[in-house]
Length: 106
Length: 257
Image (cartoon, rainbow over all chains, first blue to last red; front, side, top):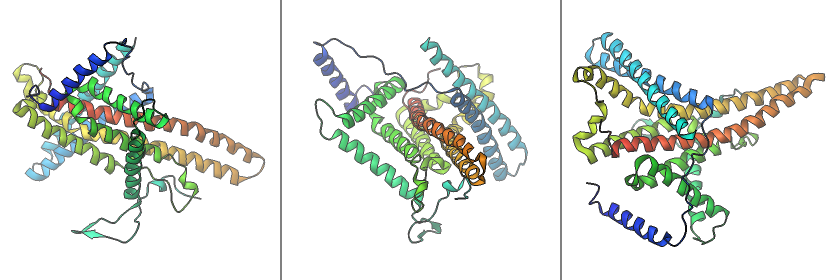
């Protein structure tokens, strides 16, 4: 799939030629650092939006399905609870990601 | 100048009213600012890169550094295959960045123009986010076929899947919401705060008397907040772009649980 993609082939070729051209000089590439670590408020805000987004999507989908199937309010309740779970899952993922990037720094 | 701090977000019509299929499609100040943002970003970046000097001047090195920054970001998140989508991510990043920064121009001092932050409107950021979301789905199915749907199935015993697959689906659908709300809310909160402080300056000075010198306090707060807003404007553009990369990565390499 990706291996016989002509553009990927060109990219690999370019990479090889770049390596050759750089061969004589010493490598002083340093990995790009992200511009600034987000502030505490930024982190808090990110977590809150993740949680809220799950709840909003769950509630909205449940409400819409209820309107379609005329089963109000069963699907609203079920989907809202699933949405809350999804929001918590999102928060947990972001927190894990932040933990990993913190661990990398120290 | 007794304006509501939210008045800066008003969308007003410029030019003649236009209607298409029953929708109001008149040209607005929001549309004008989007044209300015996209146009000036394109002109600045093209002009900066055009001379191709071996020893870059300042503008060219800014353009080169931003190329390198986005390229590294894309490569570290999506691998080498992600570089195909470099033009897209680069465009998204610069549109958001320029929109955030143009919003900080103190144009409120010149009434006919008026400040406007395109990205403070959730419909603009949501349109961007939903486009990225749909692109990830289409791209993921196109590249991986049915295997793309494995992102909904974490590696757990089958009876847990009954509960976890719907949760994963809701989590997936909440992405464009959190992606867009974060940017719009950050921009809107910052700009409202600046305007509220501005209102304090005027109100305290207008109250007069011996205490009117106290209006220097909110004025200093505006200076500090403006500096912070520049940081937030850049950081939010960066976060928007890196989340775009993370979502693209799901389409390119669906996780093999």
